[in-house]
Image: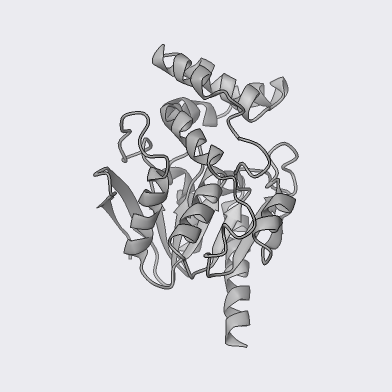
Length: 270
């Protein structure tokens, strides 16, 4: 069953979502510089077997940007609101920023379904922002969105000049500028994700880590750090893919997600 709707977050923000397909529910929490529509090819692939919930995180697509300095966990509140619509038995997939958000939400809400994180971001080893939030805010306040994107890629994500140039000549560049206003508040949340052993023990369901084997710069990185706080974490490789398989190979990503979910179902039934 396909459809669209909105859900009101605790702070009153209306979060827009769309649903595709039928079957067990899968909620997708997208990453930075993205919106729900970017995940439509993936959702279309998954819709044959699952009800896929795509939502626009605040400041993207049809979900409004609110004033700066909203509560640091507002994104977690938004995701929890979407999960409440998807209902019991849902699975959760988070990408990049969305992966960190998904883990934070799953722990806070004692989420019992499968959680799949695709190269998640967090600050277990060091703050993701590396102290650059004020600089990015200054650039955005001056209307310098392109300069803000470049500063993020260079100083926060630490991409080499050649990779930044490739982004600047790709279709992602326009999306990056459209969504960059919300980035400083994303960083505030990511900087708070400094989990230690025991902090994620309330995640009741199984957890999977997806990693593209072509992601040398943005690995899921810190698999070692994540295993320190999620001892039961399982790992799956996306052959030939990097950080953006939802764009480059949506069918392959959908198959990997199905395999993770099928493994959990089989283990439960044994």
